[in-house]
Length: 78
Image 1 (cartoon, rainbow, N blue to C red):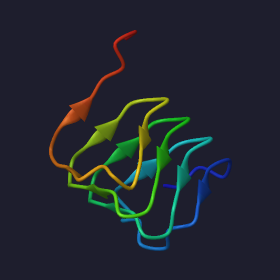
Image 2: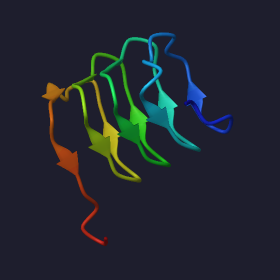
Image 3: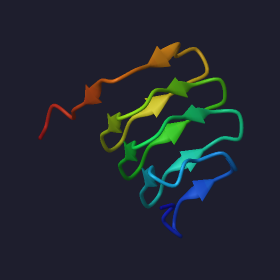
Image 4: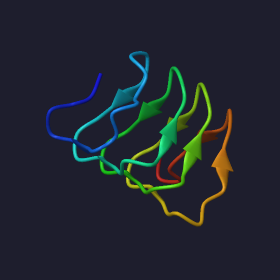
């Protein structure tokens, strides 16, 4: 599911992955199966997110970010 208020320029998002409102996903990012990208996130080109990952709100993953695999990113305010 890609929320209509997100700006997802990537055409290779798996059906099992959710991208919520106000996210920006650039075209060369790689996002795995069964992921949850919470609101207000930026995923730049060359970022690789593995399967079963949750990216919590207000996160930025720049091109210099190597790889995120099977980890849950939590906001410290939660």
